[in-house]
Length: 309
Image 1 (cartoon, helix red, strand yellow):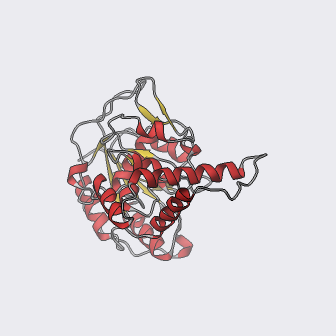
Image 2 (cartoon, rainbow, N blue to C red):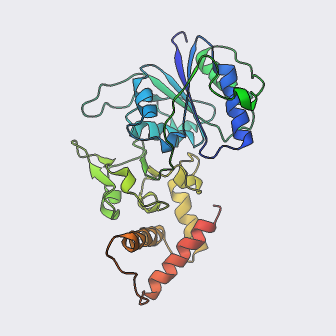
Image 3 (cartoon, one colour):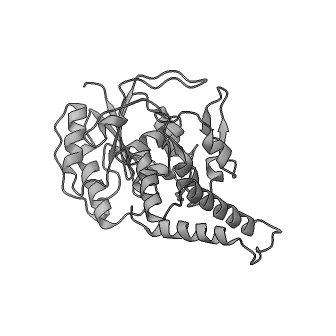
């Protein structure tokens, strides 16, 4: 491969010493290579929709390798949500069944693109070697890990650009259009105005930041498993390609004695709605006459949040 490839290194949401050392090793080995254009950005999922990092990513015309701290499937569709599109690239870190060789269909008002986007999950390995090996394979070059930089030199090395922007954690649904059947279940279920339809009648996260923090109800209710929340603790909701959409439903049915996914999703949604009302100006705290079945569903949701499924 002779064309320059953009390599995007996304920072972790909470950087510990191990994460910093891995990122520094990667950037030290990648920066300065003429075949690669290396850029450092904040955490991919938290990027502002029209912030400097998203604008930079949209300016990249060619192939792109993205290293982030979320599942590769989630990273690819986070990029898509920000109008950064291309063919999903095959890597050793992405499930075979999630990859298609077809270029994505052009959206309304956009030109079709033939470029490829490869996504790698920086949580899979503690050392830089496996990532450098995969990037080298994709770029057709040999890469060797450099020693971790000291704290004094931990900025962007020569040959790497760093995009700065104010960081704040975000929580919003990400749609996998490879799975989505446009059934509109999410649109009908969500009470917060998150979803809408584009000019072609396809579902979109029209107001993503209207989503209530911590509520994954639409991901549970989606029959195709097409909605992700990349920071959720459950891999099936966070975008793990190995977690089949039906697995979670079966597990929950067994764990909670018949409480199905629809009931749990409704409880999560209703709890988020109640929280919104409590914080709305001019509203009163709700009384104590809460139905017992709602109490039970809330208890199930609390138990679900504590599980490591």
